[in-house]
Image 1: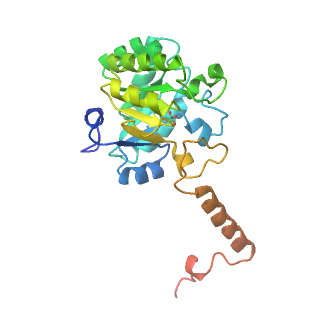
Image 2: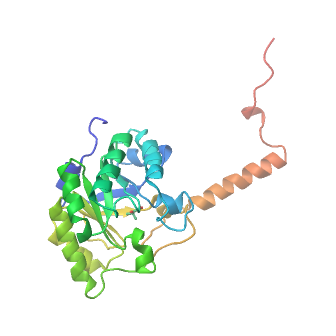
Image 3: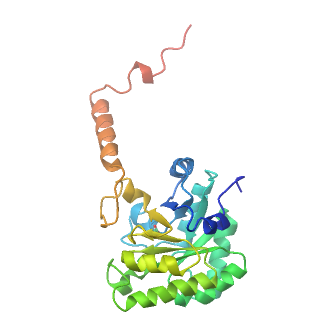
Length: 270
Ligand code: KIV
């Protein structure tokens, strides 16, 4: 572990004192950049399925794929806390299977914690994982692994569902989560949950009152153009920047401008 690496304890202690910045991260070079910017948590999210691997949703993502990407992130020796999503199918089948998957992730990658989507149904699993020394981040609201059941990516926690989510949040916090993501829920509900639980809430499409905020890196950099949820702020337009560079390269190759003398080795001297 890097000296001075961020810990789950430090994240817990930030609640009410300092807002927490979280970004998804799936590879070595971006882990280096995000880490030197002081982002507190790098989330190796199963959104890797959508934004890197080209799957239609996160359902097909495998544990091996998560481990592969997490190892690349860990090679950057980040100071940030690294949290890894347990993908669909690894924790829905029972506590023992979840324990095995989570332990494999920590042992094979050196990451710090796992994230599980879902509320009350995960309480026993979260208790067992944390008792065994596996830190867990929860994830409530629009949990993308349930997209087939939800029938699409829509706002969660409206009407009577608000009380269910509030209860879920209390239960997973009591079970031992060190923090939880709240995704695509009304601002007022996110505020109620943030006030009701002792651990930090990390919002995505949940308004400004959470203890921290997370975005999918490829969304905020303008690199993933297929779909832009309302809550995504684009801080850059990298798809356009890459396109411009690649077109310039192609034109220079075609016209024989590249490589020029500066980018070629001259004749070896006599
Ligand atoms: O996989 C992911 O990127 C996530 C974030 C949306 C929180 O779970």
